[in-house]
Length: 347
Image (cartoon, rainbow, N blue to C red):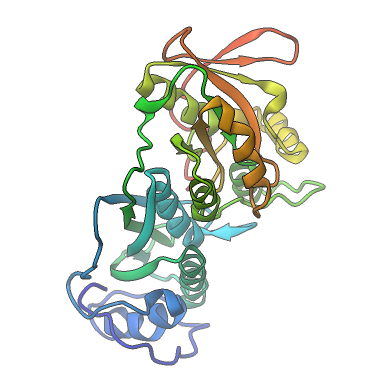
């Protein structure tokens, strides 16, 4: 897409058209002009017909990239399109940045229906608009049938960092408290339920969402966030273990303080999974001074996606680099960093 961005034209009837091999026609400028740009909508307003987008960003810049290979491509609450935008936006937000622009690169499998591609691209545009970020450049490639699982998407993003923002894990200090923004396990269980064809009494939906408003509201209140981590692959267990190891401090959290939806707990019992290790796509932890934690919870409660925010634990100078769960029975359980992924192809 990088050399082919142009003004949107009406999207043609694509319901029975599929992706095929070839360098021109529908797979070249037409695919971008007739499908991606109309689908992206307002998010592609500043897309440029150049090999690279030119951005005007003052001060420090955060830069990140990620690839998305989730299966199935669409699931309750979202699709690979929302994930590709929200995941990269959230990586920027967790670095303390205001997301500015994303690139989008698609690997499309021969035979993919354009109706499916259009839905996913439209979801990407809506997610980018919701996050206030532009989709400014990109690329498309096609691979042989049977070698691409429909769609793979890679997004890269840049964001600006305001003066004085420092969210390195090294700032974690004994006495800090840990705030969890919402319930855990929803994304992983929503994807798994579709993948395995298992029906539950309650429909579980992915929590995929941008986190910029939640974090921005905390920062706007003047609260000094010491560090943050979104709890994606490996779930809360991986996120807390990574922070403890990087900061060289201990972490303790209370089992009963962690909001786990009943449907998630039941599904995890069925599949033999630990909800602490299940991926999320719209949940983060932030570490703040002990006196600020209750204020952070109150702020998050005022936003969609933060209604179940809670203080779940604290930072300690004991057992550096180790995460400990206080169980409801009063015992201590060491939480190990997950080895590998208990749910592959989850994002």
